Amino acid sequence: MKVVFQHLTKKFASRSGGAKKEVIAVNDFDYEIPDGTLVGLLGPSGCGKSTTLNLICGLIEPTEGRIFFGEDDVTDVPCEKRGVGMVFQNYALYPHLTVKQNIIFPLQNLKGKDKLTKAEMEEKALRAASLVQIENLMDRKPSELSGGQQQRVAIARALVKMPRILLLDEPLSNLDARLRLQTREEISRIQRQTGITTVFVTHDQEEAMSISDIIVVMKDGVIQQTGKPQDVYDEPKNLFVAKFLGTPPINTFDGEVKNGSLYIGDEAVLTVSGVADGKVVAGIRPEGFIPKADGHFTCALSQVEVMGRDITVVAKHPAAHNPTVRAIVSSDNLSAINGEKVSFDLKENKVFLFAPDSGERLF
Ligand code: ADP
Ligand code: MG
Image (cartoon, rainbow, N blue to C red; front, top):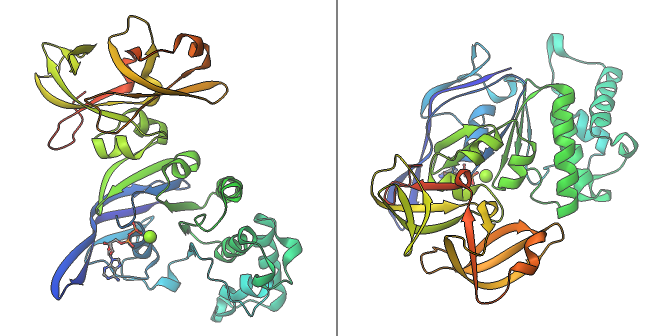
Protein backbone atom coordinates (compact mmCIF):
# COMPACT_ATOMS: atom_id res chain seq x y z
CA MET A 1 0.00 0.00 0.00
CA LYS A 2 1.53 3.31 -1.03
CA VAL A 3 1.31 6.27 1.33
CA VAL A 4 0.91 9.74 -0.16
CA PHE A 5 1.44 13.03 1.62
CA GLN A 6 -0.06 16.15 0.05
CA HIS A 7 1.12 19.44 1.55
CA LEU A 8 1.06 17.75 4.94
CA THR A 9 1.69 20.26 7.73
CA LYS A 10 1.45 20.06 11.50
CA LYS A 11 1.82 23.11 13.70
CA PHE A 12 1.88 23.01 17.47
CA ALA A 13 1.23 25.97 19.73
CA SER A 14 4.17 26.00 22.09
CA ARG A 15 4.97 28.05 25.14
CA SER A 16 8.46 29.16 26.06
CA GLY A 17 8.92 31.51 28.99
CA GLY A 18 5.33 32.77 28.83
CA ALA A 19 5.61 33.77 25.16
CA LYS A 20 3.39 31.83 22.78
CA LYS A 21 5.12 30.51 19.73
CA GLU A 22 4.26 28.20 16.90
CA VAL A 23 6.34 25.11 16.14
CA ILE A 24 6.02 23.75 12.62
CA ALA A 25 6.84 20.11 13.36
CA VAL A 26 5.99 18.91 9.84
CA ASN A 27 6.26 21.51 7.11
CA ASP A 28 4.53 20.99 3.76
CA PHE A 29 5.39 17.34 3.06
CA ASP A 30 4.77 16.33 -0.53
CA TYR A 31 5.94 12.79 -0.88
CA GLU A 32 4.86 9.33 -1.98
CA ILE A 33 6.10 6.22 -0.16
CA PRO A 34 6.07 3.44 -2.76
CA ASP A 35 4.08 0.28 -2.04
CA GLY A 36 5.98 -2.47 -0.25
CA THR A 37 9.08 -0.46 0.61
CA LEU A 38 10.93 0.01 3.87
CA VAL A 39 11.42 3.74 4.30
CA GLY A 40 13.88 5.10 6.85
CA LEU A 41 12.74 8.47 8.20
CA LEU A 42 15.94 10.04 9.41
CA GLY A 43 16.90 13.25 11.16
CA PRO A 44 18.13 14.75 14.42
CA SER A 45 16.00 14.78 17.55
CA GLY A 46 13.12 17.23 17.31
CA CYS A 47 13.00 17.36 13.50
CA GLY A 48 9.43 16.00 13.36
CA LYS A 49 9.87 12.26 12.84
CA SER A 50 7.45 11.10 15.55
CA THR A 51 4.95 13.75 14.51
CA THR A 52 5.05 12.37 10.97
CA LEU A 53 4.40 8.82 12.21
CA ASN A 54 1.58 10.01 14.45
CA LEU A 55 0.01 11.76 11.48
CA ILE A 56 0.22 8.58 9.38
CA CYS A 57 -1.40 6.45 12.06
CA GLY A 58 -3.99 9.07 12.98
CA LEU A 59 -3.01 9.75 16.57
CA ILE A 60 -2.90 13.44 15.66
CA GLU A 61 -4.64 15.50 12.98
CA PRO A 62 -2.76 17.59 10.43
CA THR A 63 -3.11 21.37 10.46
CA GLU A 64 -3.12 21.33 6.67
CA GLY A 65 -2.79 18.80 3.90
CA ARG A 66 -3.98 15.25 3.27
CA ILE A 67 -2.79 11.67 3.68
CA PHE A 68 -3.73 8.84 1.32
CA PHE A 69 -3.26 5.09 1.72
CA GLY A 70 -3.31 3.89 -1.86
CA GLU A 71 -6.22 5.81 -3.39
CA ASP A 72 -8.07 6.18 -0.05
CA ASP A 73 -8.01 9.58 1.61
CA VAL A 74 -7.55 8.60 5.28
CA THR A 75 -7.04 12.13 6.65
CA ASP A 76 -10.37 12.02 8.52
CA VAL A 77 -10.35 8.28 9.28
CA PRO A 78 -9.84 7.50 12.98
CA CYS A 79 -6.65 5.74 14.05
CA GLU A 80 -8.21 2.33 14.79
CA LYS A 81 -9.84 2.18 11.33
CA ARG A 82 -6.67 2.93 9.36
CA GLY A 83 -5.17 -0.54 9.57
CA VAL A 84 -1.75 0.52 10.80
CA GLY A 85 0.52 -1.28 13.22
CA MET A 86 2.72 0.86 15.43
CA VAL A 87 5.82 -0.03 17.47
CA PHE A 88 7.27 2.44 19.96
CA GLN A 89 10.74 2.84 21.41
CA ASN A 90 9.63 1.77 24.89
CA TYR A 91 7.71 -1.39 23.76
CA ALA A 92 4.58 -0.30 25.70
CA LEU A 93 3.58 -3.87 26.64
CA TYR A 94 0.95 -4.62 29.28
CA PRO A 95 2.98 -5.90 32.24
CA HIS A 96 0.18 -8.01 33.78
CA LEU A 97 -0.56 -9.89 30.53
CA THR A 98 1.39 -12.80 29.06
CA VAL A 99 3.15 -12.54 25.73
CA LYS A 100 0.24 -14.32 24.04
CA GLN A 101 -2.34 -12.04 25.67
CA ASN A 102 -0.33 -8.98 24.68
CA ILE A 103 -0.19 -10.08 21.05
CA ILE A 104 -3.89 -11.00 20.99
CA PHE A 105 -4.93 -7.71 22.58
CA PRO A 106 -5.54 -5.73 19.35
CA LEU A 107 -7.80 -8.54 18.06
CA GLN A 108 -10.12 -8.54 21.05
CA ASN A 109 -11.90 -5.30 20.21
CA LEU A 110 -12.92 -6.38 16.72
CA LYS A 111 -16.65 -6.08 16.28
CA GLY A 112 -19.35 -7.40 13.97
CA LYS A 113 -18.19 -9.32 10.93
CA ASP A 114 -14.54 -8.89 11.95
CA LYS A 115 -15.08 -10.57 15.34
CA LEU A 116 -12.84 -13.59 15.82
CA THR A 117 -13.22 -16.80 17.82
CA LYS A 118 -10.67 -17.60 20.51
CA ALA A 119 -9.12 -20.26 18.31
CA GLU A 120 -8.78 -17.83 15.39
CA MET A 121 -7.18 -15.23 17.62
CA GLU A 122 -4.70 -17.75 18.97
CA GLU A 123 -3.82 -18.90 15.49
CA LYS A 124 -3.16 -15.31 14.35
CA ALA A 125 -1.12 -14.62 17.47
CA LEU A 126 0.98 -17.69 16.84
CA ARG A 127 1.56 -16.69 13.23
CA ALA A 128 2.71 -13.19 14.30
CA ALA A 129 4.88 -14.68 17.05
CA SER A 130 6.55 -17.04 14.61
CA LEU A 131 7.39 -14.13 12.30
CA VAL A 132 9.53 -12.67 15.08
CA GLN A 133 10.55 -16.10 16.40
CA ILE A 134 9.11 -15.93 19.92
CA GLU A 135 6.67 -18.89 19.70
CA ASN A 136 8.39 -20.49 22.70
CA LEU A 137 7.84 -17.45 24.96
CA MET A 138 4.06 -17.19 24.70
CA ASP A 139 3.26 -17.86 28.35
CA ARG A 140 5.82 -15.51 29.90
CA LYS A 141 5.17 -12.07 31.33
CA PRO A 142 7.09 -9.06 29.88
CA SER A 143 9.18 -8.82 33.08
CA GLU A 144 10.54 -12.29 32.30
CA LEU A 145 11.88 -11.19 28.92
CA SER A 146 15.03 -9.40 27.75
CA GLY A 147 14.72 -6.02 26.05
CA GLY A 148 15.18 -7.60 22.65
CA GLN A 149 12.46 -10.17 23.32
CA GLN A 150 10.09 -7.47 24.59
CA GLN A 151 10.61 -5.50 21.42
CA ARG A 152 9.82 -8.61 19.35
CA VAL A 153 6.56 -9.00 21.26
CA ALA A 154 5.73 -5.40 20.46
CA ILE A 155 6.45 -6.05 16.78
CA ALA A 156 4.31 -9.22 16.82
CA ARG A 157 1.47 -7.22 18.40
CA ALA A 158 1.76 -4.62 15.65
CA LEU A 159 1.70 -7.35 12.99
CA VAL A 160 -1.13 -9.49 14.36
CA LYS A 161 -3.86 -7.68 12.40
CA MET A 162 -1.70 -7.78 9.26
CA PRO A 163 -1.66 -4.02 9.02
CA ARG A 164 -1.61 -2.16 5.70
CA ILE A 165 1.27 -0.10 7.02
CA LEU A 166 3.79 -0.78 9.76
CA LEU A 167 5.23 2.18 11.68
CA LEU A 168 8.28 1.84 13.91
CA ASP A 169 9.35 4.80 16.07
CA GLU A 170 13.01 4.41 17.11
CA PRO A 171 12.35 0.73 17.89
CA LEU A 172 15.97 -0.16 18.61
CA SER A 173 17.06 2.71 20.87
CA ASN A 174 16.57 0.78 24.11
CA LEU A 175 18.61 -2.23 22.98
CA ASP A 176 22.32 -2.82 23.45
CA ALA A 177 24.63 -2.58 20.44
CA ARG A 178 24.64 -6.27 19.51
CA LEU A 179 20.88 -6.68 19.84
CA ARG A 180 20.36 -3.52 17.84
CA LEU A 181 22.25 -5.03 14.96
CA GLN A 182 20.40 -8.33 15.19
CA THR A 183 16.95 -6.77 15.58
CA ARG A 184 17.42 -4.42 12.64
CA GLU A 185 18.24 -7.41 10.44
CA GLU A 186 15.08 -9.09 11.76
CA ILE A 187 12.95 -6.06 10.92
CA SER A 188 14.36 -6.03 7.43
CA ARG A 189 13.64 -9.78 7.04
CA ILE A 190 10.06 -9.44 8.38
CA GLN A 191 9.43 -6.53 6.05
CA ARG A 192 10.62 -8.50 3.02
CA GLN A 193 8.68 -11.58 4.10
CA THR A 194 5.38 -9.73 4.61
CA GLY A 195 5.81 -7.01 1.97
CA ILE A 196 4.10 -4.52 4.31
CA THR A 197 4.95 -0.89 3.55
CA THR A 198 7.03 0.11 6.56
CA VAL A 199 8.21 3.44 7.94
CA PHE A 200 11.16 3.12 10.25
CA VAL A 201 12.08 6.21 12.28
CA THR A 202 15.57 6.71 13.63
CA HIS A 203 18.11 9.45 14.36
CA ASP A 204 20.89 6.93 13.65
CA GLN A 205 22.05 7.33 10.07
CA GLU A 206 23.90 4.03 10.00
CA GLU A 207 20.79 2.18 11.13
CA ALA A 208 18.64 3.88 8.49
CA MET A 209 21.18 3.40 5.70
CA SER A 210 21.66 -0.28 6.46
CA ILE A 211 18.06 -1.48 6.25
CA SER A 212 16.10 1.07 4.22
CA ASP A 213 15.10 0.79 0.58
CA ILE A 214 14.64 4.54 0.65
CA ILE A 215 15.67 7.15 3.18
CA VAL A 216 13.91 10.45 3.84
CA VAL A 217 16.23 12.95 5.52
CA MET A 218 14.46 15.62 7.58
CA LYS A 219 15.54 18.81 9.31
CA ASP A 220 13.33 21.23 11.24
CA GLY A 221 10.15 19.68 9.84
CA VAL A 222 11.31 19.93 6.23
CA ILE A 223 12.26 17.04 3.93
CA GLN A 224 15.84 17.70 2.79
CA GLN A 225 16.35 14.77 0.44
CA THR A 226 14.89 11.38 -0.43
CA GLY A 227 16.35 8.45 -2.30
CA LYS A 228 18.21 5.17 -2.08
CA PRO A 229 20.71 5.32 0.81
CA GLN A 230 23.75 5.00 -1.43
CA ASP A 231 22.47 7.63 -3.87
CA VAL A 232 21.84 10.15 -1.10
CA TYR A 233 25.28 9.45 0.36
CA ASP A 234 26.97 9.82 -3.03
CA GLU A 235 25.00 12.89 -4.14
CA PRO A 236 23.97 14.93 -1.09
CA LYS A 237 21.92 17.98 -2.03
CA ASN A 238 23.19 20.17 0.75
CA LEU A 239 25.73 20.45 3.55
CA PHE A 240 23.28 19.23 6.19
CA VAL A 241 22.64 15.94 4.37
CA ALA A 242 26.35 15.51 3.60
CA LYS A 243 27.21 15.94 7.27
CA PHE A 244 24.36 13.82 8.58
CA LEU A 245 25.25 10.68 6.59
CA GLY A 246 28.48 8.76 7.05
CA THR A 247 30.76 7.57 9.85
CA PRO A 248 33.24 8.99 10.43
CA PRO A 249 31.50 12.14 9.19
CA ILE A 250 32.54 14.13 6.16
CA ASN A 251 35.48 16.53 6.71
CA THR A 252 34.60 20.15 5.97
CA PHE A 253 36.91 23.06 5.15
CA ASP A 254 36.81 26.73 4.20
CA GLY A 255 37.76 26.80 0.55
CA GLU A 256 37.80 29.05 -2.46
CA VAL A 257 37.33 28.43 -6.15
CA LYS A 258 39.67 30.40 -8.41
CA ASN A 259 39.88 29.82 -12.18
CA GLY A 260 38.50 26.30 -12.02
CA SER A 261 40.66 25.17 -9.11
CA LEU A 262 39.61 24.47 -5.54
CA TYR A 263 41.96 26.06 -3.02
CA ILE A 264 42.10 24.91 0.58
CA GLY A 265 44.60 27.13 2.37
CA ASP A 266 47.33 28.03 -0.18
CA GLU A 267 47.14 24.78 -2.10
CA ALA A 268 45.17 24.09 -5.28
CA VAL A 269 43.82 20.69 -4.26
CA LEU A 270 41.46 19.79 -7.12
CA THR A 271 40.32 20.91 -10.55
CA VAL A 272 36.64 21.88 -10.38
CA SER A 273 35.52 23.02 -13.79
CA GLY A 274 32.19 24.78 -14.11
CA VAL A 275 32.07 26.32 -10.64
CA ALA A 276 32.02 30.11 -10.37
CA ASP A 277 34.88 31.77 -8.50
CA GLY A 278 34.18 32.49 -4.85
CA LYS A 279 34.26 31.16 -1.32
CA VAL A 280 32.87 27.67 -0.71
CA VAL A 281 32.60 25.04 1.96
CA ALA A 282 34.49 21.97 0.76
CA GLY A 283 33.38 18.57 2.06
CA ILE A 284 35.71 15.59 1.68
CA ARG A 285 34.53 12.10 2.65
CA PRO A 286 37.05 10.17 4.82
CA GLU A 287 37.48 7.65 1.96
CA GLY A 288 38.27 10.45 -0.51
CA PHE A 289 41.96 10.79 0.39
CA ILE A 290 44.80 9.02 -1.45
CA PRO A 291 48.12 9.25 0.43
CA LYS A 292 50.82 10.39 -1.97
CA ALA A 293 54.25 11.86 -1.18
CA ASP A 294 53.80 14.70 -3.69
CA GLY A 295 50.01 15.07 -3.16
CA HIS A 296 48.44 18.51 -3.35
CA PHE A 297 46.62 18.52 -0.05
CA THR A 298 48.91 18.67 2.96
CA CYS A 299 47.92 18.21 6.60
CA ALA A 300 49.81 18.02 9.87
CA LEU A 301 49.85 14.38 10.94
CA SER A 302 48.48 13.74 14.44
CA GLN A 303 48.25 9.97 14.61
CA VAL A 304 47.43 6.78 12.76
CA GLU A 305 44.71 4.46 14.05
CA VAL A 306 45.10 0.88 12.86
CA MET A 307 41.82 -0.94 12.18
CA GLY A 308 43.16 -4.02 10.35
CA ARG A 309 42.17 -3.80 6.71
CA ASP A 310 42.08 0.01 6.83
CA ILE A 311 43.82 2.69 8.80
CA THR A 312 42.51 6.07 9.91
CA VAL A 313 44.91 8.93 9.40
CA VAL A 314 44.10 11.60 11.97
CA ALA A 315 45.45 14.99 10.93
CA LYS A 316 45.02 18.72 11.35
CA HIS A 317 44.49 21.50 8.83
CA PRO A 318 44.08 25.22 9.56
CA ALA A 319 41.10 25.54 7.19
CA ALA A 320 39.23 22.55 8.67
CA HIS A 321 35.98 23.20 10.55
CA ASN A 322 36.64 20.36 12.98
CA PRO A 323 39.63 19.94 15.28
CA THR A 324 40.73 16.84 13.34
CA VAL A 325 40.61 15.63 9.77
CA ARG A 326 39.96 11.90 9.41
CA ALA A 327 41.06 9.99 6.31
CA ILE A 328 40.41 6.27 5.92
CA VAL A 329 42.96 4.59 3.67
CA SER A 330 44.19 1.08 2.99
CA SER A 331 46.62 -0.32 5.55
CA ASP A 332 49.08 -0.86 2.65
CA ASN A 333 49.96 2.82 3.18
CA LEU A 334 50.93 2.31 6.81
CA SER A 335 54.72 2.34 6.38
CA ALA A 336 54.64 5.47 4.19
CA ILE A 337 52.70 7.58 6.69
CA ASN A 338 55.01 9.01 9.33
CA GLY A 339 56.74 12.23 10.22
CA GLU A 340 55.09 15.60 10.78
CA LYS A 341 53.17 15.99 7.55
CA VAL A 342 50.99 13.85 5.34
CA SER A 343 50.01 14.68 1.76
CA PHE A 344 47.07 13.43 -0.26
CA ASP A 345 45.53 13.49 -3.67
CA LEU A 346 41.74 13.69 -3.60
CA LYS A 347 39.14 11.49 -5.28
CA GLU A 348 36.97 13.86 -7.26
CA ASN A 349 33.73 11.96 -6.62
CA LYS A 350 34.29 12.20 -2.85
CA VAL A 351 34.67 15.99 -2.80
CA PHE A 352 31.56 18.21 -2.62
CA LEU A 353 31.36 21.99 -2.71
CA PHE A 354 28.63 23.92 -0.92
CA ALA A 355 27.56 27.56 -0.88
CA PRO A 356 28.77 29.00 2.47
CA ASP A 357 25.49 30.83 3.17
CA SER A 358 22.73 28.45 2.02
CA GLY A 359 24.63 25.17 2.24
CA GLU A 360 23.32 24.22 -1.20
CA ARG A 361 25.55 21.93 -3.23
CA LEU A 362 27.58 23.60 -6.01
CA PHE A 363 29.74 20.70 -7.20
P1 ADP B 1 11.39 13.82 16.64
O1 ADP B 1 10.51 12.62 16.77
O2 ADP B 1 12.03 13.96 15.30
O3 ADP B 1 12.40 13.90 17.74
P2 ADP B 1 8.93 15.28 17.20
O4 ADP B 1 8.07 14.94 16.03
O5 ADP B 1 8.65 14.57 18.46
O6 ADP B 1 10.47 15.13 16.80
O7 ADP B 1 8.81 16.85 17.47
C1 ADP B 1 8.97 17.84 16.48
C2 ADP B 1 8.79 19.22 17.08
O8 ADP B 1 7.46 19.40 17.49
C3 ADP B 1 9.63 19.49 18.30
O9 ADP B 1 10.05 20.82 18.27
C4 ADP B 1 8.69 19.22 19.44
O10 ADP B 1 9.06 19.95 20.57
C5 ADP B 1 7.37 19.68 18.87
N1 ADP B 1 6.20 18.95 19.42
C6 ADP B 1 5.98 17.62 19.28
N2 ADP B 1 4.81 17.28 19.88
C7 ADP B 1 4.32 18.42 20.43
C8 ADP B 1 3.12 18.75 21.19
N3 ADP B 1 2.21 17.82 21.47
N4 ADP B 1 2.96 20.04 21.55
C9 ADP B 1 3.87 21.00 21.24
N5 ADP B 1 4.98 20.77 20.54
C10 ADP B 1 5.23 19.50 20.13
MG1 MG C 1 10.61 11.05 18.18
